[in-house]
Image (cartoon, rainbow, N blue to C red; front, side):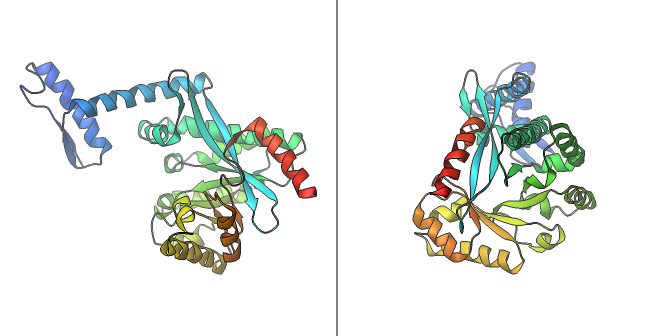
Length: 311
């Protein structure tokens, strides 16, 4: 495969060095848009690329300076209203730009390779915080961590997780990995071996944003996934859009027939929670109960929730 960048004289410059530099920038833009493509240099895109390069450089520094944080969104059992766990979500508190959305920097981390170090930090921090909560008396919860396909393709994620669990003392059965459909559709012997190793350690797996990706469902059985997460785009529209409601219902029925659990993302109203409960959805998360919170606020949320359950 090839990626081609094109700069034109005199529009983009009159000397060879300038034209080569701008053609090089266009080539990287071509790579970002997909292999086997070409791009002409343009000023607006070059500014965006320089900003991306600055963020990529800043990410490496941010890890060392502890600018990244984990927030946690509670997951609720829809049938008995118990608090069953949390999804760990990364946040970047940049000293100049403020909070930077994961939608902005995760793709940059993946394309630059920083996702390897960043992913290791997320796993370490989630396990450390989970053990801290156990020591403070919190019980019967799990922590779900999103894992990039690049972390799996490197082939060392099982040892990374094992080291984190041993270092922190967090029980492996309380750690859940959220995987993407695109990862599991990449059916390789290495992936199967890695997931088997992690499963033997006691970890659980769920499929994130289920229904938005590939349609080959054979991987659900092969990789012994335990839970499907219904994408929030379907959940938020299901009360107004019959097609989205049918998709949600079909995912729940599929899960039930395969002996899997379901968790709905993006629940914002009581009526949506009621609808999911009636359809047989097991768990949910969303702003109806709580937005993602820093660890200290989660402890307060937990205490308040336990008091509410007792009344």
